[in-house]
Image (cartoon, rainbow, N blue to C red):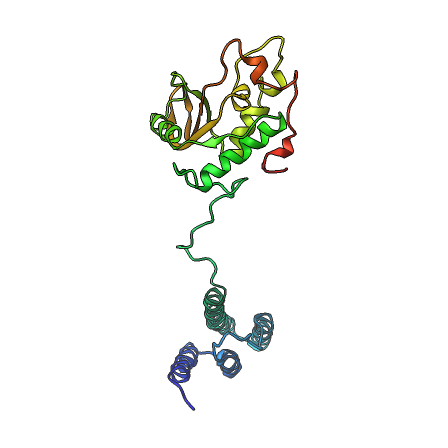
Length: 296
Protein backbone atom coordinates (compact mmCIF):
# COMPACT_ATOMS: atom_id res chain seq x y z
CA UNK A 1 0.00 0.00 0.00
CA UNK A 2 1.35 3.42 -0.93
CA UNK A 3 0.98 5.86 1.91
CA UNK A 4 1.28 9.65 1.78
CA UNK A 5 4.70 9.26 3.42
CA UNK A 6 5.85 6.79 0.72
CA UNK A 7 4.63 9.09 -2.02
CA UNK A 8 6.39 12.07 -0.46
CA UNK A 9 9.67 10.14 -0.21
CA UNK A 10 9.44 8.96 -3.85
CA UNK A 11 8.98 12.56 -5.02
CA UNK A 12 12.00 13.62 -2.97
CA UNK A 13 14.08 10.77 -4.43
CA UNK A 14 13.08 11.74 -7.98
CA UNK A 15 14.16 15.32 -7.32
CA UNK A 16 17.53 14.09 -6.06
CA UNK A 17 18.16 11.92 -9.13
CA UNK A 18 17.06 14.64 -11.54
CA UNK A 19 19.35 17.15 -9.84
CA UNK A 20 22.36 14.87 -10.27
CA UNK A 21 21.51 14.09 -13.93
CA UNK A 22 21.40 17.83 -14.70
CA UNK A 23 24.79 18.24 -13.05
CA UNK A 24 26.29 16.08 -15.81
CA UNK A 25 27.25 13.07 -13.68
CA UNK A 26 27.75 9.77 -15.50
CA UNK A 27 26.03 6.40 -15.00
CA UNK A 28 28.12 5.31 -12.00
CA UNK A 29 27.12 8.44 -10.10
CA UNK A 30 23.45 7.90 -10.88
CA UNK A 31 23.69 4.25 -9.79
CA UNK A 32 25.20 5.36 -6.49
CA UNK A 33 22.34 7.81 -6.15
CA UNK A 34 19.90 4.89 -6.56
CA UNK A 35 21.76 3.15 -3.70
CA UNK A 36 21.34 6.25 -1.57
CA UNK A 37 17.63 6.35 -2.36
CA UNK A 38 17.24 2.69 -1.42
CA UNK A 39 19.20 3.21 1.79
CA UNK A 40 16.90 6.03 2.88
CA UNK A 41 13.65 4.50 1.60
CA UNK A 42 12.83 3.00 5.02
CA UNK A 43 9.94 3.72 7.40
CA UNK A 44 10.82 6.18 10.18
CA UNK A 45 9.18 4.00 12.81
CA UNK A 46 11.80 4.14 15.55
CA UNK A 47 13.67 1.02 14.33
CA UNK A 48 17.37 1.10 13.48
CA UNK A 49 18.42 1.59 9.84
CA UNK A 50 20.05 -1.50 8.33
CA UNK A 51 22.54 0.36 6.13
CA UNK A 52 24.87 2.23 8.45
CA UNK A 53 26.38 5.60 7.61
CA UNK A 54 29.98 4.26 7.73
CA UNK A 55 29.13 1.67 5.05
CA UNK A 56 27.43 4.32 2.94
CA UNK A 57 30.44 6.63 3.21
CA UNK A 58 32.75 3.77 2.25
CA UNK A 59 30.72 2.96 -0.86
CA UNK A 60 30.58 6.57 -2.00
CA UNK A 61 34.29 7.13 -1.43
CA UNK A 62 35.03 4.00 -3.50
CA UNK A 63 32.94 5.42 -6.33
CA UNK A 64 34.84 8.71 -6.10
CA UNK A 65 38.19 6.91 -6.43
CA UNK A 66 36.95 4.88 -9.44
CA UNK A 67 35.53 7.99 -11.09
CA UNK A 68 38.77 9.94 -10.64
CA UNK A 69 40.87 7.00 -11.87
CA UNK A 70 39.06 6.42 -15.16
CA UNK A 71 38.20 9.99 -16.09
CA UNK A 72 40.77 11.43 -18.48
CA UNK A 73 39.77 15.06 -18.65
CA UNK A 74 40.62 17.30 -15.70
CA UNK A 75 37.38 19.25 -15.92
CA UNK A 76 35.52 15.94 -16.06
CA UNK A 77 37.26 14.80 -12.85
CA UNK A 78 36.30 17.98 -11.08
CA UNK A 79 32.73 17.79 -12.28
CA UNK A 80 32.36 14.16 -11.16
CA UNK A 81 34.04 14.85 -7.85
CA UNK A 82 31.69 17.76 -7.11
CA UNK A 83 28.66 15.69 -8.12
CA UNK A 84 29.60 12.86 -5.78
CA UNK A 85 30.25 15.24 -2.89
CA UNK A 86 26.79 16.74 -3.40
CA UNK A 87 25.34 13.23 -3.43
CA UNK A 88 27.17 12.38 -0.21
CA UNK A 89 25.75 15.43 1.56
CA UNK A 90 22.21 14.65 0.36
CA UNK A 91 22.42 11.06 1.62
CA UNK A 92 23.75 12.17 4.98
CA UNK A 93 20.94 14.71 5.27
CA UNK A 94 18.23 12.15 4.47
CA UNK A 95 19.63 9.49 6.77
CA UNK A 96 20.32 11.85 9.68
CA UNK A 97 16.87 13.35 9.41
CA UNK A 98 15.29 9.92 9.66
CA UNK A 99 17.43 8.92 12.65
CA UNK A 100 16.66 12.18 14.45
CA UNK A 101 12.94 11.74 13.85
CA UNK A 102 13.12 8.18 15.20
CA UNK A 103 14.98 9.28 18.33
CA UNK A 104 12.47 12.06 18.96
CA UNK A 105 9.58 9.61 18.70
CA UNK A 106 11.28 7.23 21.12
CA UNK A 107 12.01 10.05 23.55
CA UNK A 108 8.40 11.19 23.56
CA UNK A 109 7.21 7.67 24.16
CA UNK A 110 9.60 7.08 27.02
CA UNK A 111 8.59 10.35 28.65
CA UNK A 112 4.92 9.44 28.50
CA UNK A 113 5.47 5.91 29.78
CA UNK A 114 7.66 6.87 32.74
CA UNK A 115 5.77 9.98 33.76
CA UNK A 116 9.06 11.58 34.76
CA UNK A 117 10.57 14.95 33.99
CA UNK A 118 7.38 17.04 34.16
CA UNK A 119 8.20 20.70 34.57
CA UNK A 120 5.11 21.09 36.75
CA UNK A 121 6.17 18.32 39.11
CA UNK A 122 7.02 19.76 42.50
CA UNK A 123 10.13 18.59 44.26
CA UNK A 124 9.49 16.98 47.61
CA UNK A 125 10.18 19.15 50.62
CA UNK A 126 13.30 18.24 52.61
CA UNK A 127 12.60 15.73 55.35
CA UNK A 128 12.90 16.89 58.92
CA UNK A 129 14.36 14.79 61.68
CA UNK A 130 11.10 14.30 63.62
CA UNK A 131 8.33 14.62 61.03
CA UNK A 132 7.93 18.37 61.59
CA UNK A 133 4.34 19.67 61.36
CA UNK A 134 2.62 23.03 61.11
CA UNK A 135 2.38 25.02 64.36
CA UNK A 136 -0.87 24.77 66.30
CA UNK A 137 -2.24 26.15 69.56
CA UNK A 138 -4.25 22.97 70.13
CA UNK A 139 -3.02 20.77 72.95
CA UNK A 140 -4.10 17.69 70.99
CA UNK A 141 -2.05 18.61 67.90
CA UNK A 142 1.02 16.80 66.66
CA UNK A 143 2.87 20.09 67.04
CA UNK A 144 2.24 20.11 70.80
CA UNK A 145 2.99 16.39 71.09
CA UNK A 146 6.39 16.78 69.42
CA UNK A 147 7.46 19.57 71.77
CA UNK A 148 6.25 17.76 74.87
CA UNK A 149 7.83 14.49 73.79
CA UNK A 150 11.38 15.78 73.52
CA UNK A 151 11.14 18.08 76.55
CA UNK A 152 9.84 15.26 78.72
CA UNK A 153 12.52 12.85 77.49
CA UNK A 154 15.17 15.29 78.69
CA UNK A 155 13.39 15.94 81.99
CA UNK A 156 13.00 12.22 82.62
CA UNK A 157 16.76 11.79 82.24
CA UNK A 158 17.12 14.11 85.25
CA UNK A 159 14.19 12.54 87.16
CA UNK A 160 11.98 15.60 86.73
CA UNK A 161 8.21 15.48 86.09
CA UNK A 162 6.55 15.94 82.69
CA UNK A 163 5.33 19.22 81.23
CA UNK A 164 1.84 19.76 79.81
CA UNK A 165 0.78 21.99 76.90
CA UNK A 166 -0.65 25.44 77.55
CA UNK A 167 -2.48 27.09 74.65
CA UNK A 168 -2.21 30.56 76.18
CA UNK A 169 1.56 30.25 76.34
CA UNK A 170 1.61 29.07 72.71
CA UNK A 171 -0.50 32.05 71.58
CA UNK A 172 1.76 34.47 73.42
CA UNK A 173 4.81 32.87 71.79
CA UNK A 174 3.17 33.18 68.36
CA UNK A 175 2.39 36.85 68.90
CA UNK A 176 5.94 37.66 69.91
CA UNK A 177 7.42 35.56 67.09
CA UNK A 178 5.73 37.87 64.57
CA UNK A 179 8.29 40.54 65.46
CA UNK A 180 11.12 38.35 64.10
CA UNK A 181 13.40 39.95 66.69
CA UNK A 182 15.97 37.62 68.23
CA UNK A 183 15.92 39.07 71.72
CA UNK A 184 14.10 37.97 74.88
CA UNK A 185 10.76 39.63 75.54
CA UNK A 186 11.19 39.93 79.32
CA UNK A 187 8.32 39.48 81.77
CA UNK A 188 7.41 36.87 84.32
CA UNK A 189 7.47 33.80 82.05
CA UNK A 190 10.35 31.52 81.22
CA UNK A 191 11.48 31.83 77.60
CA UNK A 192 13.93 30.03 75.30
CA UNK A 193 14.70 31.28 71.77
CA UNK A 194 16.43 29.77 68.76
CA UNK A 195 16.90 30.69 65.11
CA UNK A 196 18.00 28.79 62.01
CA UNK A 197 17.16 25.22 63.04
CA UNK A 198 14.86 23.07 60.92
CA UNK A 199 13.19 20.73 63.44
CA UNK A 200 11.91 20.64 66.99
CA UNK A 201 14.47 18.06 68.12
CA UNK A 202 17.27 20.16 66.64
CA UNK A 203 16.07 23.20 68.57
CA UNK A 204 15.82 21.42 71.93
CA UNK A 205 19.14 19.65 71.39
CA UNK A 206 20.76 23.09 71.01
CA UNK A 207 19.15 24.23 74.26
CA UNK A 208 20.37 21.13 76.10
CA UNK A 209 23.62 20.01 74.42
CA UNK A 210 24.79 23.34 73.02
CA UNK A 211 27.84 25.25 74.15
CA UNK A 212 27.65 26.37 77.81
CA UNK A 213 24.46 24.34 78.37
CA UNK A 214 24.41 20.97 80.22
CA UNK A 215 28.15 20.43 79.83
CA UNK A 216 28.81 23.83 81.38
CA UNK A 217 26.43 23.42 84.30
CA UNK A 218 28.11 23.52 87.71
CA UNK A 219 25.99 23.54 90.92
CA UNK A 220 28.84 25.34 92.66
CA UNK A 221 29.00 28.08 90.05
CA UNK A 222 25.53 28.44 88.58
CA UNK A 223 24.86 30.38 85.39
CA UNK A 224 21.50 30.99 83.73
CA UNK A 225 21.04 28.94 80.56
CA UNK A 226 18.45 27.49 78.19
CA UNK A 227 19.23 24.09 79.67
CA UNK A 228 18.31 25.05 83.22
CA UNK A 229 14.92 26.32 82.04
CA UNK A 230 14.19 23.09 80.12
CA UNK A 231 14.85 20.92 83.20
CA UNK A 232 13.52 23.29 85.87
CA UNK A 233 11.50 21.13 88.25
CA UNK A 234 8.83 23.67 89.24
CA UNK A 235 8.03 24.51 85.61
CA UNK A 236 4.86 22.63 84.70
CA UNK A 237 3.55 24.06 81.43
CA UNK A 238 4.88 24.74 77.93
CA UNK A 239 3.76 26.58 74.79
CA UNK A 240 5.89 26.99 71.63
CA UNK A 241 5.75 28.56 68.16
CA UNK A 242 7.72 28.86 64.96
CA UNK A 243 7.86 31.69 62.43
CA UNK A 244 9.59 31.90 59.05
CA UNK A 245 11.35 35.27 59.07
CA UNK A 246 12.80 37.03 55.98
CA UNK A 247 15.27 38.71 58.35
CA UNK A 248 15.89 38.39 62.08
CA UNK A 249 16.48 41.43 64.27
CA UNK A 250 19.82 41.43 66.13
CA UNK A 251 21.01 38.76 63.64
CA UNK A 252 20.97 40.75 60.36
CA UNK A 253 23.03 38.22 58.41
CA UNK A 254 20.36 35.54 58.88
CA UNK A 255 17.68 35.59 56.18
CA UNK A 256 14.68 33.38 55.44
CA UNK A 257 15.12 31.23 58.53
CA UNK A 258 12.86 29.75 61.17
CA UNK A 259 12.55 31.66 64.43
CA UNK A 260 11.61 29.41 67.35
CA UNK A 261 10.23 30.40 70.74
CA UNK A 262 9.06 28.41 73.78
CA UNK A 263 7.47 29.89 76.87
CA UNK A 264 7.41 28.15 80.24
CA UNK A 265 5.22 28.55 83.33
CA UNK A 266 5.90 28.97 86.11
CA UNK A 267 9.14 30.68 85.20
CA UNK A 268 12.43 28.90 85.79
CA UNK A 269 15.92 30.27 86.40
CA UNK A 270 14.90 31.92 89.66
CA UNK A 271 17.85 33.07 91.74
CA UNK A 272 18.43 31.06 94.90
CA UNK A 273 16.23 28.16 93.74
CA UNK A 274 18.64 26.23 91.52
CA UNK A 275 19.62 23.48 93.99
CA UNK A 276 16.05 22.25 94.39
CA UNK A 277 15.03 22.72 90.76
CA UNK A 278 18.03 21.63 88.66
CA UNK A 279 18.87 18.01 89.41
CA UNK A 280 21.81 17.76 87.00
CA UNK A 281 25.25 17.02 88.31
CA UNK A 282 28.27 19.00 87.16
CA UNK A 283 28.67 18.54 83.39
CA UNK A 284 25.98 15.82 83.28
CA UNK A 285 24.35 15.57 79.84
CA UNK A 286 21.85 13.19 78.24
CA UNK A 287 23.09 11.13 75.28
CA UNK A 288 22.80 12.70 71.86
CA UNK A 289 20.86 9.61 70.76
CA UNK A 290 17.96 10.89 72.87
CA UNK A 291 17.25 13.38 70.07
CA UNK A 292 15.90 12.48 66.68
CA UNK A 293 18.63 14.12 64.61
CA UNK A 294 20.14 13.33 61.20
CA UNK A 295 22.94 10.79 61.63
CA UNK A 296 21.67 9.39 64.92
